[in-house]
Length: 435
Image (cartoon, rainbow, N blue to C red):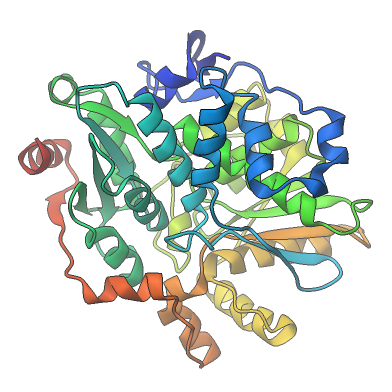
């Protein structure tokens, strides 16, 4: 299978090239030149498949340069934790995507990418630098996935003062081959620096580089797996399958579109956003107008220029009407988010994090705006509430249980390289720290 650049469909590369490059030479993102269909037998037997078997059946349709035994091992090593569906009511369920090592949904993509890259680089002599811009959860997931991987170093760029204390401890305390860069700016500045680094001739001579953000196609492919895993766990599949996805850089939702194109019967996607609402504005106006991101309580969604928008419009041939047929969107502020955390606890005895709370509000609004009487509404709970304990505990006036793998990082010393958001400053810091 070939993968094309969203800036020019004539530029096509193998999956290995797409993964190692991260981003196309023309600045575009890679997408598969065709979306393979899963056979009907797959869906007939879906409930009999393990999560790992689902991942393998999906992955092998995109990955044709790795033998089945090695690919199965890559999937099994990456998807080593569950994604249970928790039913709250007749129409509402939560897909818990936080059972991985860093308690965030990004563990799925980061672990898969790490295992895939190690396979592709096993005969390489040159060291590889992984660049990651993070608004919180991506960085820790990638750091964990690549920790102590031979021949690989990781540079994590995060906005100073704009991630939770827990997230920052996860980002900055691993050491060894993981390096944290604390940028005096917002997430979009971090993302801009990563993209600019890829095109800097000096740095291209020093480093062999790729990205582990959702701009890397190998981050998206494994995120399709849990869409199928969610549908597998739905008890009555006769009702419409609705998925509410807390959205920032839109990689998670793009993975859902790929799953749907493969045959998954998703009736509607809901792009749940906070006050960073450029995608909602696009659906309403037909114009995509990026803007500076705004800090919110659901900080992993604080993106003013989502990279994966390029994939979405490429997927739909730049036709906003086609996008509207598949995706709706709703935006909610911090006050509404806090109220939703409290409401979910009181009504369903479930503790939800700020991102999941935005997803809950968006699904609730969908119910209010439609006449659907019975649906399978699934909210993606993208992070464990303990990662935002300072917010959740204040709202609920009770302690949040903190898993051991999270609490252990609090006893470690933070180590980060502080730098300004201009490229010259970052470039200098990167070279001095890593080369």
